[in-house]
Length: 528
Image (cartoon, rainbow, N blue to C red; front, top):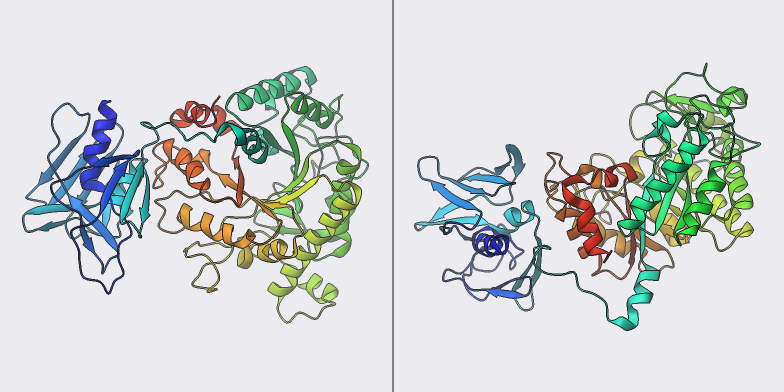
């Protein structure tokens, strides 16, 4: 109850919302504020600054015993808001705030107007984990604390449909033994199996119903293969038989629980470093060194060589043919996003379509791979889903007017040569799961902006949209990640878009660490 009182009073002076157009005059009346469905009354109305497209509200004195303090330091012209978890300091004239000591850019500075201290509402509310909405037609601010109000539950007649429709997945990384199996389980099949069972139990208890398990971390396999060697994550030595079929075991255990199993492949990464002395004799870098490119301190299979692409497709089809998987999943390892990728010789040898630039040729290489892989999967088993999880920004609006209104330093189209828009429009994939690993408060790539952009991309197609979430960022200094409510707010936000049919979390290890109490929040949200 004290927390709710604190939210209500704090919201009276901390919200910042979209306002009227810049051509309109500043207004101080006509705006209603609701917190968790309850109207908040204030004797001082919000002040709208149309030139900045923000709304500010007055800083007011908070009564004692409400769990938060608000202060105004006249000498430095600084407003400070403190809770047990968060301290926000904003100074008149400065275009940044200090949140727990970290400097974060502000859209509008705090100001002292006619004796009233006015502060931006949206910025502070989102820093405190609130979800803020604005309805222009009714001029209403809606706020969701997540803690005070229960998550809306679908009517009984559609609960089953909703549950069946929504994917609640988790990426399980095997590279570097990140999520499974542990390095301590090398050469111990029983221990690896116990670890996987415990992992599934933990994830299912959180409400998860699907796992995306990395079965090809570095041109190798977590299953017996005639094309690629056993992965070193199983025994510590690449090419060594672990004594059982891990993929068969994982699929059986996953399906026992009514959960989906998606086989996750890194298509073009050949090795996590540039060394080859520890690679198995049948590793692609040993058998076909002419296919290998060294870039970004790793070994890559060159996507520009058609025979190399077909080798990867054949390796994936081994799994599709032999195992009852629910889906084939690729991540964003196409061309590396940084450094130099020396493929001039392949460009000269394999540019049969006469592309004028290497960038166009690279994108066509990936397009051909995605198209041919999707066709091959569905020719064998039409029911197996084929999806890809690209980096969260396709292109910035500053580069392409049809891109998202973001300022990302890397984009999937320009840096990884992955033309996801074409994959969607041609329906070469069954779903996309963009990695939207930013918070609502991000200045470079706001979460809400990207969800809306990707929703628009899949509209009018048969391609599903799942959203990739970043629980691994919780507790980091990056803006918006100081509370687990950020993830819950993102899930709630997704529900307003029917095109969003699920969520995937990176990764299992980070969920199991329960950052900032996320596990209980997920259990409550998913009704576990």
